[in-house]
Length: 128
Image (tube, rainbow, N blue to C red; front, side):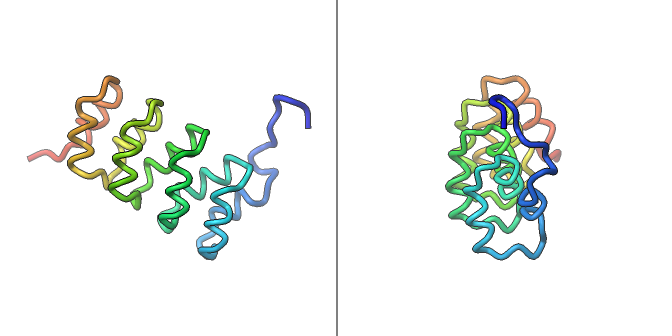
């Protein structure tokens, strides 16, 4: 493959396999370390992604992978707190839009330096 080019999204069967509803837990864990970032992104978005896999994906070098993880409603509180400190706004915006965002994390994000993050948090704030 030429330098600077990546494979087409549908060219790797593991990308689709990572979305399979019946994917065994052991395969999910293995695929969380896949070399293809689209596979890791699909794994990060899974509601059944194990904590161990999430703990690794939270450090992924690709913003898209961390963003998919941040938007995952199954994301535990400790990893929500960790991603709230992410240096990339798309990750924090995804976290701010997470329907399972913990109140204390929301309270941190409402003071975020990015206006986009603050507006997403305020838009999802429960109205009395």
